[in-house]
Image (cartoon, rainbow, N blue to C red; front, side, top):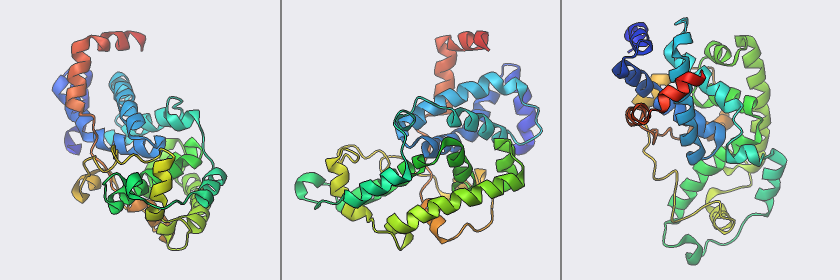
Length: 280
């Protein structure tokens, strides 16, 4: 699609719904995965994608085509997500200190009553996905975005800097500091790092008791995962980030529950687009 991007953008700006749909479909999955890592909750991520898509639609005419459309879309998304105050964790911020204390006290037996007939391994995988996304919320929003873009999406440092308004060198320096902070926590607490004291399977019972894991509603396990060919569309190789980063880089990417085609159709039908344009 990249060769046709300028033409598609011009058509979309001039009111071509099909061209706009094509552009949104090309970024919907990456927007969802970025939102999920930034906000820590599938529901908050889905809501955020809708808000970001509206911003992309209304700001598309300002795009100068000096970068790839996906890079510009990331920038719009990053600006929104860094400043988002609507998410659960924006209302109740976390810290590594609090998270560490919680891990120290949180182990109970995985009884049949707690597991509710769901396999322990399935619940452990669900907890792994949830816990690692929630752990990211211990970083401030800008640091989280720096970490997520570089480490989890493997975006080039120059592109990351462009998205966040930093030079490539400044971005690399900040990523290095953040990476050390996260690695220190993972090394002490996360069993997935090979050295940490926590273990996903042993933690399941406590997570259910504290309502952080619901065997009857597995938010991550129920999502459709992207395969490698899909994720390769919006990731680029970056320097090796070290052994501990594997805790995050091994996490799956998910297909967006929000379909851009249906969303756009509903938005245009509702008449909301006229109101949105009037406010811009």
